[in-house]
Image 1: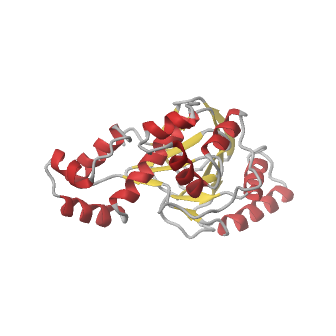
Image 2: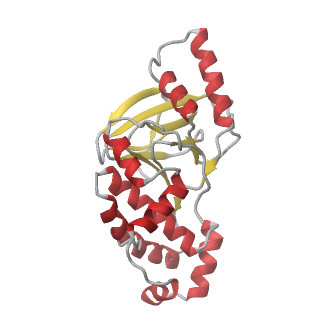
Image 3: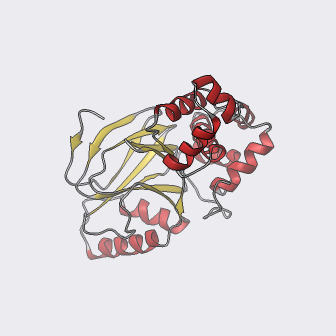
Length: 266
């Protein structure tokens, strides 16, 4: 990333980004919690892209060079924390599950950033307590270092519906299946099928944020049927893609009774 801005203090505020709008690469001396009240948020660093719908937040550690991108109408909420206050003990960006309580705490804390009252400081203390209890979610697309791996990843990103096996993709890029399988595990810590599901889910979230019908999203992203897509989406995010569409269209995320931490990708 070039032309990196340095903003020492990570801001605490709420702002709206239109679909496709970006916040260019920058870094803070503070930690930051980034939450999308509506739409889908993508945070990108040199190491990869982390993505979060309305029941997830992204932890960005102090000093991390990162950029934001909005998919759909994004109600962005930012919470800055001093570098010596790391309630999660994390030194890399991480996606976190957001419970209904944590969501309300984030919304309340970003409502009036200029307020320095004892009540608001207590609100932040409870918010940090809830962060500590938030399960981590592997919603990340790592940046490949090996050019052979990068070539295969580029093919899948270009066409999420491409159903070719790793062997066939390797043949198209001049790499062996065993070599690629080893690279996926070594660089990404996951198998090729696990990574491809991550990639497809990211593309699916982007399409859903644009208002694309669920069945169309399923086929464009490589699922054999809408029901297969709905099943994977529900297991990954805790709600259906149709629910995601209806809630984000309302202009602000509203957690439902079934929302909450779920098992993630298989």
